[in-house]
Image 1 (cartoon, helix red, strand yellow):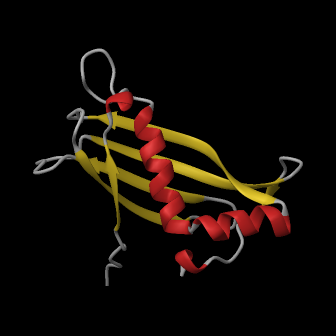
Image 2: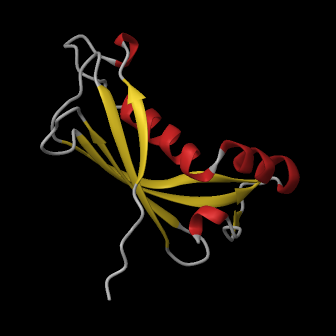
Image 3: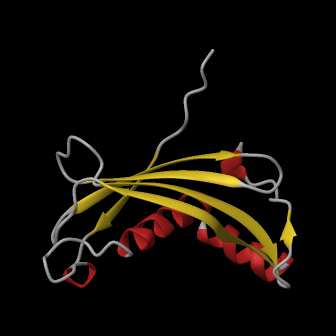
Length: 132
């Protein structure tokens, strides 16, 4: 039996400040949209508690982006996110930014997170509700 991954949807409004001189979203700003979507998946309160109580937090280990159909000022993007814990030390998030009525994602991203302590040492990812 194939396991169906849960898809998390997050709305990201494209503002003028997100675009470059040609009017499309500047490439690095997609990382901001994807970061907000991950925070929404995990929970801001959980992330804050992890740091304040345990002095651990997530760090990006590796990412890969594919640009297919640039979003423009005024678009309301649907950031679609799935995730999979891969062992004790890594979570892989897959993000897609969809334009309204898009036939393919504007941008796709694979991003690997690890957990670090306050001394920047690798630690196992804690048991978190979104991983169940």
